[in-house]
Length: 127
Image (cartoon, rainbow, N blue to C red; front, side, top):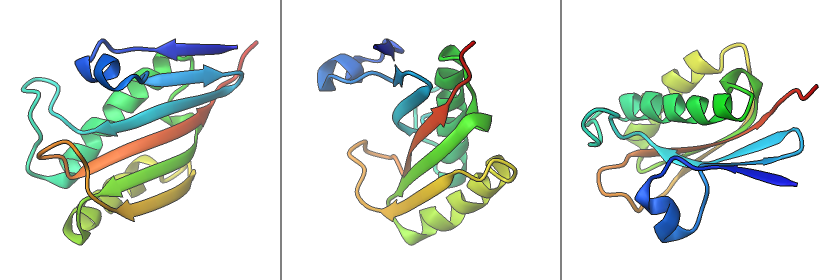
């Protein structure tokens, strides 16, 4: 059985996806960009974009009964090497004790202004 978490973002309906999907004890969180939650704009700094994305991902994980502490896989997409250099220390800080597996790719991101997109798979305990 699958449970889905939606944020109400217009893109969820437009592109036909959920913020997160729970399958048993596994939570898959969609790729998340780092818009500022107050302005809805992308900060210039890719590191801050990563922090914003991880905060949004953690909120979805918490709604699903988990958190970033339960991350088992991270997939990080950045637009260029400079963005990668800014994002890596943020990931190192957040995942210092968690150590999920990781994929890090340089590619285009379809949201203008986005320099980073992060996707997480996490586990959860169910009693």
